[in-house]
Image 1 (cartoon, rainbow, N blue to C red):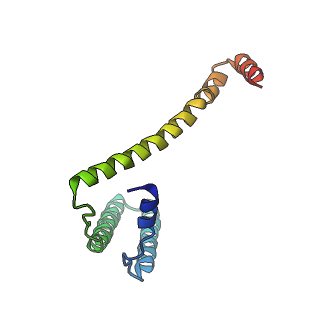
Image 2: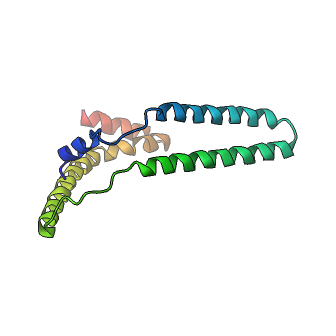
Image 3: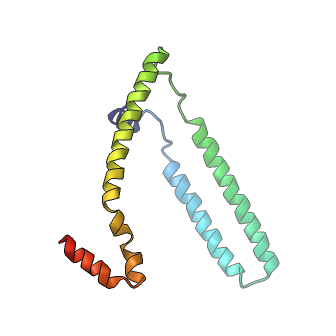
Length: 140
């Protein structure tokens, strides 16, 4: 897949998101915030109550995560085989990896130009201020 086709796939709106998902998540976050506030209050009280509250909060968080995981897991689409010919699929894979490689090469090239500047704070802190200042002055 080319970068353009990946971007088009990301814009796919055929995956249905429950209309009340935002409200459900906001409610869960609010519950966790209230639980955190209770935990802070209980820390000043008996340690046994704090442990009990932490256990209940942990169990609630685990149930929330399991619920969200099962809900989102059911809504995912099955992958579709887009190539019937393995040779064609291999050629397409090679071209995609080549494109990725060329883009990464550009990034590595840009980062290598900045290699000296990445060590600049360490050199300044180690007492090489004059050398750093001189080298910067010579570059201008």
